Length: 303
Image (cartoon, rainbow, N blue to C red):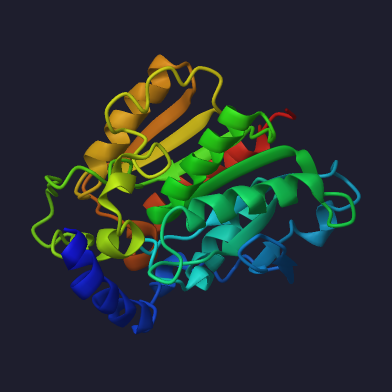
């Protein structure tokens, strides 16, 4: 696998990375919700991370307290960028929580393999928590979340916050994310799954070129005993899709979080596959997903 990672996975990952962004289906872009945004550069040890900050509607500025803040990490197998694909979700959450949503463009493999993405994600979350004053959010009411690879990074941020005690995270939202990078026997119910088994070794080889890292708790929180004894970790919402290759990862991790008393809710979307909220016309189910997240963000406690 190491030879594959070096000679095949990394070049193929660069080809995948250079491909144009998939088109988000018009039905789930919610053009009726206007965006109120600004660009922000967040300093990290890997250079500045660009972010788009989404604010609640201006008519709430004087009528509501300083809103909570939610840091979003996009999907893409730790290799693909296009963080702007989450624009509709971020607009929706900002307007309906209401909250400030910080949508982050983090470093990617193969140029920045593990542990760079989770390390930078944690640094970004710490910066956001410390810099609410002047930016219009309450850094003491911090949530983190993401979809697919972004969900895995959010879980890593929550884990590091729990381990170090240097960051207070009040919510983690983990949407159809991978939690076991060591397991190569994942199966999807979909005939043509969005996450195709043939692509997984390419992404894994680029992100985790050292096989020893595939059991690390920040890459594979489900491996072995990594998910045991998580009492006190940030409260979590876990979202899975019935047809998704990554469904079992989410189901198993939700059970571990429940044992630790850290599971707020596990919501499964029946009959749907990975990234349905971006790649299908499932408007009602997408609203259901976003309303679930917005409701939990609104209740993010100060920690």
